[in-house]
Image (cartoon, rainbow, N blue to C red; front, side):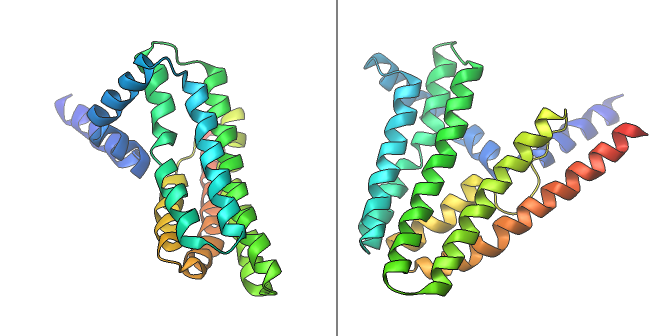
Length: 211
């Protein structure tokens, strides 16, 4: 029995995504900041919307070609993605609608960022990088959509190379150091590969459920 329990714990740890691991590692910090924002009277959904506004402002600067400034703003908005959920948990008010708003807002944030890059490269006449921005945006949305669609079928999938946190860790520094083309190449390829990985994972799990 002890051996089986140990094996289950190990398997559970192996299934943790990078996002899950970082949330656990920085739980105390997130709890402290989240508690402070709650004392200020801010609502979790308000923080979610503020994150979207910050990313939209960052995307505006990207569209103007001010990659470093836009990248700094987007980099600063990253922790906000974890704070809204933390605030709701500390309030003992996590709701399905709040999780829904958070997820939808995350998609909007990514799309406005890639939209800013797409606009800039179209204005520059750089069709290749514009196409890469489009592919990266499409792949990022599909990574999330495949999981959401799978969950609606009673299957959960978190596998893949580039979850949202990994995408953020690739794109934000590349923007800050004004090398967005490198990030776009990586994201255009590996976001779509991640979506494919999830499709195959869902196929495998759905097949096992039939057995």
